[in-house]
Image: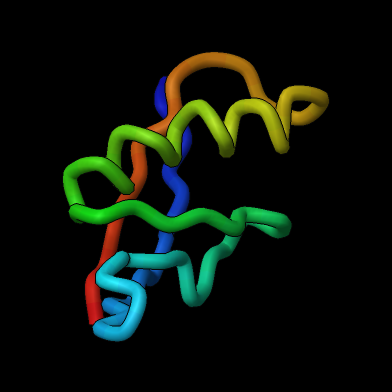
Length: 65
């Protein structure tokens, strides 16, 4: 059964990137030029951060602000 992670992201107009501004997964810090690129990066990062606690797929709920 997939696990869910809720990630809030914010656009930084000066850097022209979306970045993780809030997450229910501690330690998630990343940015990307598009929401799609950010969405693709996050599951692998979350899996790496929580590998001792989780197994299986992770679904990311990405909430842009």
